[in-house]
Length: 449
Ligand code: UDX
Figure 1 (spheres, rainbow, N blue to C red):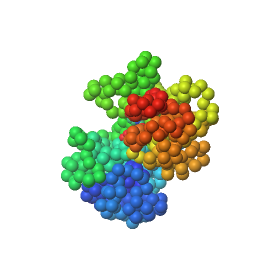
Figure 2: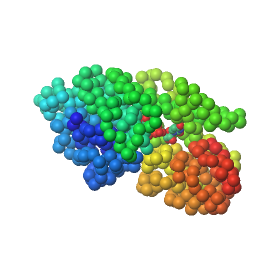
Figure 3: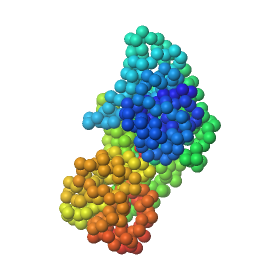
Figure 4: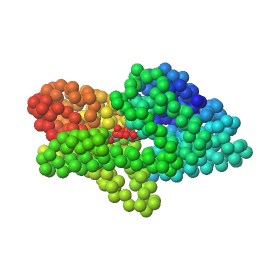
């Protein structure tokens, strides 16, 4: 099928690459010329496992000019960002601007389904449909060949292509049968797994067959928010249990394992630590809280998830104060800056939230990260953070190392050399990730968050 995808961020670009790989004819549009130029040269502006390979081995057309491609399209995805506004609402400027461009430029001569993949608050799909239809009618064109659907994404950064090529479920929110049929056709190669498996993106073991769930638009919008926020509160729950385990002398990792062995609970998203960050969980939790507030609906569980997540930073500070009492003048090295491993995304990282608090308390903060530092040097140029590529050098004169992101590179470091470099030999593993015996053996006092 002929697909146009508007937006080349994590969602848009990975969706476009996956759809091209399974055999569709894909054009990708973005207003950012530098991104499009880089993509035309085969260089993805984001780091994602397998993405360069799929872009190189497919024929995606990259352009800044929607008019070049829009009228051939059978399917148009809106996959632009919806960042948080200061009041917690999602910023819909990019979504509206994409919808305006479609409304102004489209001249429907065959069935076209317009799909909202961006995460948008409840009701926005229907207002986008209204605005595009109105614009088409204002241009004296017929809107009867236009169809609309909400199709939320569930891809995780770091394994975005795997999540897209081998999804658990595809949610199609529409009351329009043509839209549903067109989308079923679009996704059939994924559901039936009839495409060639790319070497760079292998299927996960024991994956279930992809389930297509057909709902109305509002339910699809709600599925997206409630899924992300449920995962966030699952993590906050284990973090709250972790605080209690600390007091009682229980091992939270064993507790999480014991809980996860119950198939109703499952082991995923039960890793206790510094808490959740990134560009989705904080934004979607805030947005859902705002949506509920607008409906005058109490959501104490969601509020608690947010509160517990913020309190993880206090937990680290308290552990530092217990060890040092006065934090002023301490050298603290943070192992990990990205919001999770296997991504170069440094936005909304809990490690950065921690670093900012430490700076307020008079601590000197040095970051090391195997992948995130080039982005961080740009994004956090105004912060008083130091950046050091080599973890051993980053530990020089350090009073404490805090493991803030569970990069596998941090498992195999020469901790003997690190220990020799430290001024005070203390480590907080805020991701419950390292081998405590080894760290203790090299003379570093090791505790978990
Ligand atoms: C998330 C959703 O998982 C995905 O389905 C959605 O479409 C986009 O948002 P992503 O933000 O890429 O994906 O990251 P994810 O792997 O979900 O992790 C989010 C945060 O939770 C990270 O900061 C991570 O470190 C933290 N986390 C995750 C934990 O603290 N403990 C866990 O057990 C799992």
